[in-house]
Length: 313
Image (cartoon, rainbow, N blue to C red):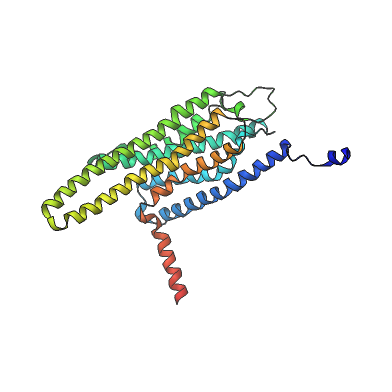
């Protein structure tokens, strides 16, 4: 009886738990990664294939899409960063620093896109002579070079890797003060700056909306109420859209980075779910921005119509 009991598999062993966590990672991260990568490829092709979109504003957006595409590619590796492994020193640094660099670049490019739109709307008369239009290449290089520099600091010596380290673990790569600086010195301020610019743009839009409604009431009194109602609905949609983006996209990501820091190393299922959903929710923001411009999908619309015409004939 005892011999039979000893031969039974131990389903509660650490190996079994790790295997179930790997399955959960694959189930969550791979579909999300495919969606993000495919969506970015569709929009990138739409911009590249439409000559009317070859301008500074869309170059910024194209750079953001490339960073978002890379974010989708590295998404399955993010939950695995909380587990120990036997990777070599060089491979371990590459495994941890590249995802960090990619997401920092994504945030930098997202901030740059919002800065371009902010200058265009708040200072429209000075937009074409502004730094976002005159220094396009410089701004794009900065959006990639500065994150690369910060992400490379652990490789340059700011790490806890010692000669006796035998396991690849992110605590050995990222010291606590480095993570504090990244979260509260870069990530959170960037998110707040993007949100603040969006709020300011909504206030400007509201002021312009009132001016337009005032002119309509004085010129077309009969149809003024209907036009005013239509504009109010569009503005309300913009406000609701902003709050939905903040709640659905940014809040899960901020929860993820705080849980990752204060409960790091536990490799729990909660951490896996937050890492997948938190990062992917932030990566969906470029899709929301792209939906406001039908020109991004004009190439695909023409292609679809040609296919339909070919099939019908």
